[in-house]
Length: 93
Image 1 (cartoon, rainbow, N blue to C red):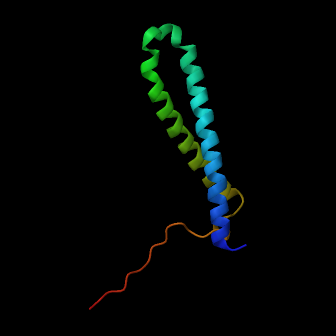
Image 2: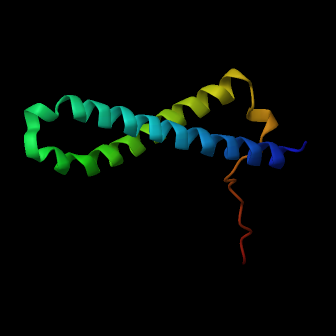
Image 3: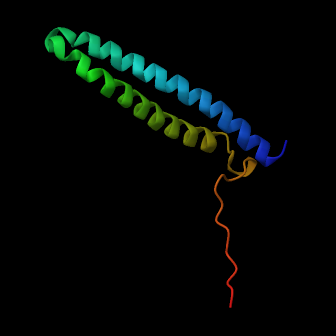
């Protein structure tokens, strides 16, 4: 397996993990919103969009930290191709 294939497989697996983390985060935040619902009353519905946005953001943050940890833990830096490489542009004189 070459570095590009390793990178693509890591990204595909990471995308799945990111979706799972986001769904779990949304579920947890909805559960917490349900627990405080008696205190909020009818205003609970106004918090639902913020719960979804917060869950997605929380999932992305957890995925970023988890992917950095996995790359460091299993020493994957040399086994994967960088996604964005800086190309040196040749100067025209």
